[in-house]
Amino acid sequence: MIETTTCCCDPCTSTELGVEPDMRLGDTCVLCCCRECERCDTLIDLDCENQIKDGADAGYWDVCDICLLDTDILYDDELEAERREGMHR
Image (cartoon, rainbow, N blue to C red; front, side):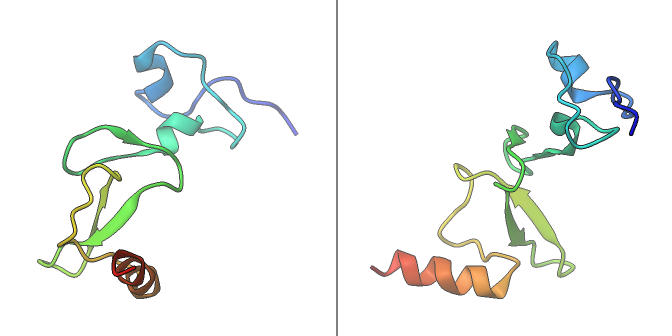
């Protein structure tokens, strides 16, 4: 396997932020795989985004923990049930 040291994204988020690209995932750096919060535009760590129903077209928005509201409904029904259960404890 050939180890890639340059991200295939243009522009690369790591390059824009002035940090060394983390290429553990292959030809795309870790930061380029992160999503931005739909509400505050900050990068959300991998696997830490909250996917909420947008209501309009049955799609979802990615929001960070800080922007997640009690009135938001998670896109995944099972995770939403667990979240609501945890809120009532």
